[in-house]
Structure formats: C-alpha cells, structure tokens
Image (cartoon, rainbow over all chains, first blue to last red; front, top):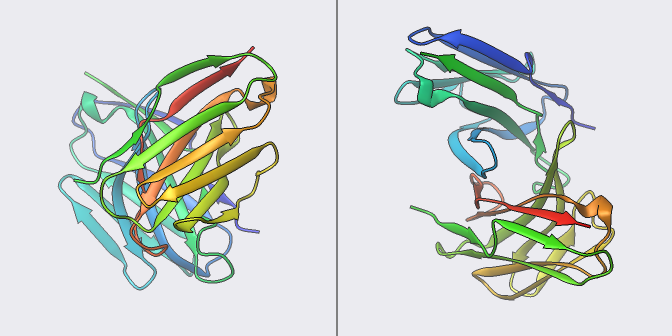
Length: 114
Length: 112
C-alpha cells in the first residue's frame, strides 16, 4: 500500500528565503505526482503536475522535482512571500491497479513571516 | 480556467437527516471525485465517477452514496447523517484519470 509522507508538518521562514518542501512515497510505481496548496478552510489549488517520465516542472517561482527511484519529490519555492503561507500537499497516482486511487500526503503547513 | 463549484460552504445537519452535497464542473471533465478531509488523516476518497451514471467505490464508501445523472454534476448523499461524518468534503474533477485534478472550495459539514 502506498504511503506518502511530508516532513516537516510545519515550517516557518522569514520573507525572501528560498525553501524546499519534501514529499516521500514508498512505492515507486507511480504514474504522476501532483503538488497542491490549500488555504485555511478552502479547497486545494493545483500547483504542478509531474509525470513519472519527467524530472522536474516549473511554474513561476515554483519548481518541483521528482526522483522515482528514491521515492522523493521536492517543491522549491524561490523568494518566499507572505502570500505563500498555506498548507502544501503532494499526491501520488499509481501506474496500475486503480488509477483513481490517488494517495495524498498530510501536508506541510508553511508560514512566511514578513 | 476550470471551475469546480460546490453547493454550500458550510452546512449544519442533525443526526439521521438525509444530506445532499452537490458539485458542478464547467470543463466537460469525464471524471469526478468526492473526498473527505480530516485532521491527521489527510484526504480520503469516498467515491468517484468516470462517466454519467457510472461510479466506483473509493476507500471509505460506507454511509455514502453518489449520483451522476449529468456529466457536469456529481452529488454525494449521506443517507442518514451521523456525527462521525462531520468533516470537510471536497469535490474534484479531471479530464481523464491521468490528468491533474481540480478541486472545489469544499463544504464544511457539521452533524449534531
């Protein structure tokens, strides 16, 4: 059974700092991995989707990398801003036996201090 | 932009009531999903639908049913609400099962 871990559960950084959020998964047989942000009491906003054949994806100040063999993905946020404060979740989709059975991590709560 | 809307942001119901949560997407997506999100447990899939009138159980379908009569609309039904169904309910859609999922704003349901 796939397990997805995000450590740390919470992170506090000063504004302007570059930071890395981690996502680890136990089964490397994945189809893709998606990063989301969630603001308090709200739904999830899709940030980046990486296919299993890709090594990284970029969108603005965000860069997500994927290392399937080691079961890791990282989300790099450059020049963090207070508006980046949110919970960040990763979600892993398997490549067989139930493509709909996406497994979510429990998230890293990020606070960017002005 | 894909838009997924949910009928209510907050809902308070009593034990035993029948509860309907509605989700609508405007991008002609084939697949729609219902999740619940609880602290410490993350998101868990309740049901998903890959076509009109087609559905499959997720990880925690007990106490829930779903309906998809039109492609754009996916309803979650709590037949007889119980206090342990107090949760945040999130609807999502995707064009195919391989594509990224887009989420609605969520419905915070409290069952008293």
